[in-house]
Image (cartoon, rainbow, N blue to C red; front, side, top):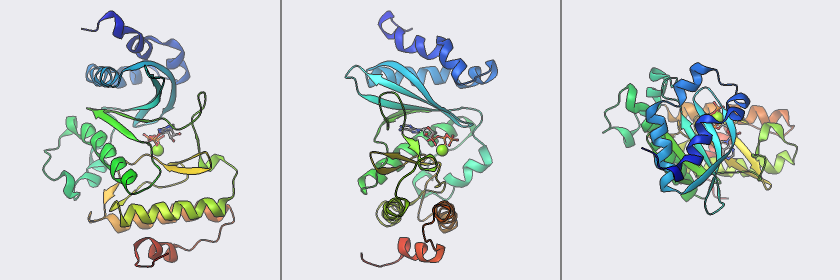
Amino acid sequence: MYSMSDKSALEQLIDNDEFSNRLNLDRKTYGLVFDRRTLNAVYYLIKKYSIDYVDFPISSGKESLIFKVVGMNKKSYALKIYKMSTLKFSNTMDYIKGDYRFEKERINRTNLVYIWAQKEYTNLKDMKKSGIKVPIPYGYYKNALLISYIGTRTEPAKQIKNIETDFNALYEKIKTFMRKMYKDAHLVHADLSEYNILFYRNNPYIIDVGQSVSVKHPMALEFLRRDIKNINNFFSRKNVKCDDEYLFNYITGDVND
Ligand SMILES: Nc1ncnc2c1ncn2[C@@H]1O[C@H](COP(=O)(O)OP(=O)(O)OP(=O)(O)O)[C@@H](O)[C@H]1O
Ligand SMILES: [Mg+2]
């Protein structure tokens, strides 16, 4: 089914011992992630976006695998592959149910993970349009998502939890993004913390927005308060003056600044 010229990228993805070692994948996980449907999804994106090769693995989490891949045009991308079977069904449904954008979908265990990729793609688009720094979404297919890579040639950008910088200035930028997200993109991140913000060229980049919900979601304000708590906890530890109530009003209120 794959022609010779397609083989290099796919072969690297499947057969590269080095990456399976580096990712510490046991055989079980390996099998779970790269099932047939996943390979087909990856293959589709590799073809459509002229991906030349897989450079290195970026992250291996419970719910996704992320690789740096490079296009024929030498452009770098991040390829995020959602694991088919570990996405927690009932948990995940909370973020989809009540989101009017996905009401028409008939959701089951198989297509849930596809909706997740689509949801992250759409959320990234909306956030980017609102002027928030996020990875640019290029395309998705089934459980695979192609976005811009953030980092240098050899190293992905660090999470803000692992950097040294002027945290007061960083806090101001993140506050602005949180307000834009609510006011302009009409979204709540719903998993915002020092883990899901990268730092690149002196700017924060918001990532991991698959679970982000519309402000109309019945739990939106609850999620927003949790995001505020996480962010303020982190910045308080960096000696930034933070106040949950103030930030809530700053994000949702009518203040013009
Ligand atoms: N576009 C990107 N460019 C560079 N690195 C990225 C990019 N997207 C994600 N990463 C890295 O991969 C990690 C995991 O990504 P993400 O948070 O989107 O996935 P996840 O499934 O939630 O994983 P986890 O459960 O580890 O949070 C990030 O913390 C970040 O270090
Ligand atoms: Mg994450």
